[in-house]
Length: 322
Image (tube, rainbow, N blue to C red):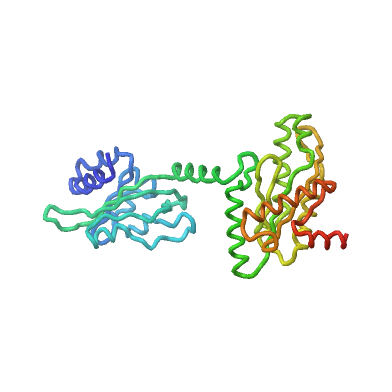
């Protein structure tokens, strides 16, 4: 039975109370009706379950007291009143997307709905009927798919698609406020030897441990992502000086170098990091990542377990201060 059919049937059956109850209680959707004054006149069994109100308690109460809805993201109550709008304009309405129903006990669930006016035989409007359903499972599945599309399956860190987007957004902010940011490209040293000697399962656990170390050693405003394999990209969304990026790189290298307890082993691994600075080393995400990547290879070729800037002048300053 379609939503439109249910709405028509419900509107008719509310006027034919004797056989309405059993029919409306047997459908899978919740049905709620109000009179012309906006007071509850009917709830079927599903509506009672979803709102937490028994019809006997809800009848004649203002419908906003029984049917409380909010924005699913902000949690703020919705100002939209589709039932009253349906009566006032004699047409169908619905709640805004991402709406949640707040049950009487405070538990929220995602819903979809459709609302229509109830017409009397003479054509006058005597109230409105809403048909709604719980879409929490479907919405959770959709959110999960969206998360999987933007995050690495092994470490649950942002993947290349998401980090590119965040770097692009950070560049736009930095350009607007005349600020700097840094992109760090990190690769584990001799990681292949661990995979070859202990197996990929142990290697994967080591990558997860590294991901956790990286995430706990940057600011909440920064982003750690896994590019793939044993490569990671870190966005430092705002820095005052290039030295700030160097200090973070040193901190990350030290954190990675500490022993990783994995499957009965105390694994030790080092990391090489390349640093690209906006706007010195690029003004877009792809260029900054490429600059940091090239700097990371220079760090490997010059002994590993340390960092290099993409800009040679900055490297000279680091070496002079070392």
